[in-house]
Length: 207
Image (tube, rainbow, N blue to C red; front, side):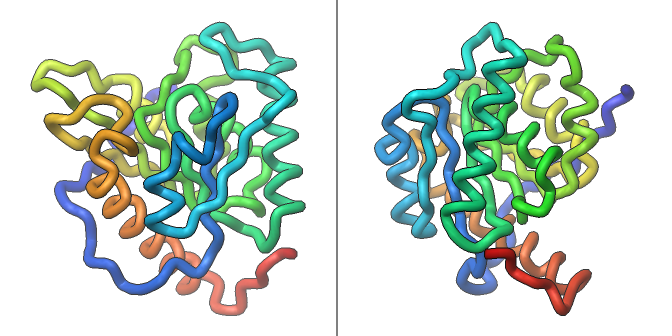
């Protein structure tokens, strides 16, 4: 699949109001509350971690991915009203992408911070194509020569993908430059909600 050039934004849009949908931060491993503490504070986000289940390692197996995605989707359904805005970083990003493609009814938007994805994994490109939700990929750029090909390819592979870089900051941006990350995320989530409201004025929330 030939990846398209994603839309690249220079600055976040003005905040247009309170986020109406739940925000859920998905984590790979334990300690989600600490890992996303600044996001929990900024937009009253909930967190999810798979305590006893699959960990998405550098070498990802199909069984690990299936268990992680299924567990996260079940938690979203059980946790309250859907669809939700999903935030993920690092290795949790690919599981979140697969979840969004498989269960589009659960996802309002995706915010992917500094995603770590093995782009050679089987089904990678198709997984991106399946994502319907507006998706923002944020990459920290510590130096001018930082390689951003991987996160940019993710944004380019998703139909409604947008790519943003935060310069002069270390990975992960959602912790090292949380204010900028949260400003971008909040702006994008508001835009996503506006798009859905315009397209579906009678949108139903699923409990």
